[in-house]
Image (cartoon, rainbow, N blue to C red):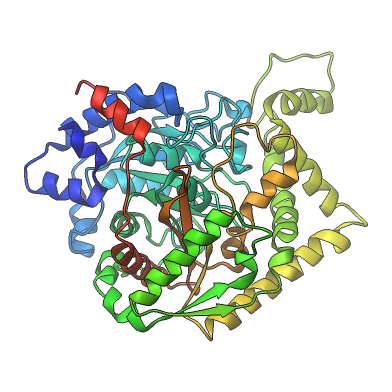
Length: 501
């Protein structure tokens, strides 16, 4: 039965629905293997109990609405920045250590109502601020393909958990590529929907205008099944705008209509000076595969690419400095015994110095600076203006092509500690993925193959805002044409052989 853990979620679900596999037995098997491999990869901050209190039969209304084509009775991991009523939620930060929310995030509630099991809470860069999961307030996560390398970030634990067979699907967050970049480095699928398609209610805020809940999975069909559960209108989120009757699984059946689609390759994001040569080579292979499938591949230009990282990091830091001001140790955050000899400001300082990590402090300082009098006009307002310009330029490109193409990560997974001493080198990891967040368009990362050193590479496809279903269909078309598919990392395959089910 343990070989089931290698399968994509949709194939396991078919076995459950056919009566060949018991869902609760599968969950217990999944949880035990997750614990077995956890000492090597460190994907989780918290693992669930063996008797899950949260799994239930799928709600009839939800199943009927989308023709029973929903993710159901599957073990799922949840990033530790998304609220879970029965599991601690720390956002990867010491300042929220031990915090258990009194409610579920809307996406988590919908997953539970569909009968899914929560395996545990995955590790991340603190408050989602990082590209390697090394900025976790607790410990780094290791890439299942090479334990000496990073899994990407900030949703490194989510990507690692899916790649390491610790969960079939992962719920993560994506502020500037945090679902897609680790998916590429771990050899899985990562999807960021259009802003507002998945409710942010219960997502601990980093940069509210950029934050998305996203999905990590082994195949595009699994993403579509998950979207049919969690992409719902939500009155608890003022930015919610999900189409109430969309069927993302049904959209996959129309992928044949996309064989005459036009894909624009962003030239500036295929620059040999910015990208690893092996990444470019595998991307060119992927473009040939798409061309062989009938897709029209053209080269397009987006000159604003050189400004993407400065604009993103100014805007994200500014919003973070506001959002994280609430963690003062009184209303929220790490608490100390009262000290009447300290004034209030010193008590705030003590909590924030002790509770926040270095990268979070760096971004709070940057955000406070760019919002301060005399500097907001020079930095923050110009970054906002550039974001509008980028969105307009991307919209113009979409008037000429159906999809945009780029690498997901410019680099292969790098060694743990390799970029920690220079924040700008870490920020450069996001150059391809921040575009979708700034322009508010859906984006997906798909496995493109392995490098000579046996490390995964991912490609990224983007679609116009709101065309999430069409993007998933194109992702599925590529997946079929490439015939690459999910591969179990050798280390994980060895651990599965050793595992006594």
